[in-house]
Amino acid sequence: MTARVITITSGKGGVGKTTATANIAVGLALLGKKVIAIDADIGLRNLDVILGLENRIVYDLVDVVEGRCKLRQAMIKHKAFPELYLIPAAQTRDKTAVSPSDMLTITKKLRDDFDFILIDSPAGIERGFRNAIAAADDVLVVTNPEVSSVRDADRIIGLLEAEEKGPGRLIVNRIKMDMVRRGEMLSMDDVVDILAIKLIGVVPEDETVLTSSNRGEPAAGNEKSKAGQAFRNIARRLAGEEVPFMSLDHAEGVLQRLARLFSSSMPSTG
Amino acid sequence: MNALLDRLMGRGNTTPSAKVAKERLQFVLVHDRLDLSPDKLEAMKDEILSVISKYVRIDRNNVDISIEQRQRDNWLVADIPLSPEDEEDADEAEADGKKSGK
Ligand SMILES: Nc1ncnc2c1ncn2[C@@H]1O[C@H](COP(=O)(O)OP(=O)(O)OP(=O)(O)O)[C@@H](O)[C@H]1O
Ligand SMILES: [Mg+2]
Image 1 (tube, rainbow over the protein chains, first blue to last red):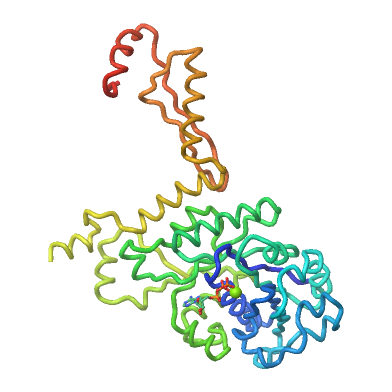
Image 2 (image 1 turned 90 degrees about the vertical axis):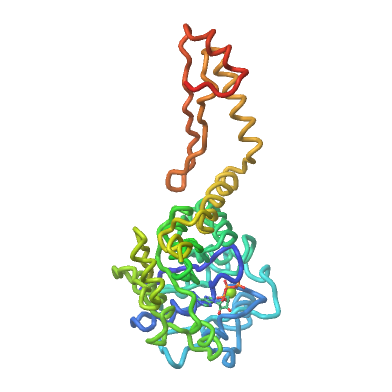
């Protein structure tokens, strides 16, 4: 086994990196892959609560880096998905407690034992981002269909190219197909045109993302969740499957359907 | 009802905001990527044109110099029509008026 290291980043904060990391991790675990998710957002630990593992933390990434524990001891095994592990971020330290070379060392030790190592990057373009991409074989750039997050995504893609990690692949998160149909929200095709990178997934705006995070059970584990399905599709694409981009048309009302009849090219999503 | 029909058929007279967003993003990203402000780009164009004008006569009204995105690379693309010499006088006469229709 030799793991692929995949970093999830964005530039702008709050666009869904942690949500994507948790859900893709679960999606990969559901495919029978051995996955470890590393929270590289030092000081703003979050991946643990989204995965429902917050009560099981003893050691964190900074403890590993500073030699207070063995790597093994900081790895938390998920009970619902035995193939899934987490290394949590430290909550009381800052990004400078970890360096890019620490990330290389840690991922190197993990590579033999896993199929995928997912790294949840903090927002921004500074140290935390550098740490998160240092070991990446692949980078997923998360954006929302909205001007400021697309602009920041472009900046990140530029930096990834400069670091020879890029251009990465794109996740368009929180899309509202009814608004896209009305011409009031950028479509995934628009975002792909603007950023000129490959798309790996389109995730709809979906209440189940919030209810899942309330419970600490990522939507990818919920058969009925549309966002969950979109994240499972991303996991399958990462695992090498060809998965067509699904249509989210089921949710449309009569009016939208009518509008669709009049409109020439309809985007689909997945 | 007419307004609704117009909306359905995309005939409304206001540009859909997504289209505006796309155009604004494409514009701002060109300058972000090159770290070149719109003002500086204009200055560069003027300078390029004056250099060319030292050697050949150009039809300034129909010049098109722009930055074009091809995948993630940017290209400076210039269409600079050259004026034939025998039209020199006619062109010059028109130059201080409005755009020549040529
Ligand atoms: N597809 C979605 N549908 C609805 N809500 C979503 C979706 N994706 C993310 N959210 C919500 O958006 C918020 C921000 O998500 P998240 O914490 O994953 O972003 P982030 O990029 O990791 O933020 P930060 O930059 O602070 O680390 C959360 O409240 C999450 O529930
Ligand atoms: Mg986060």
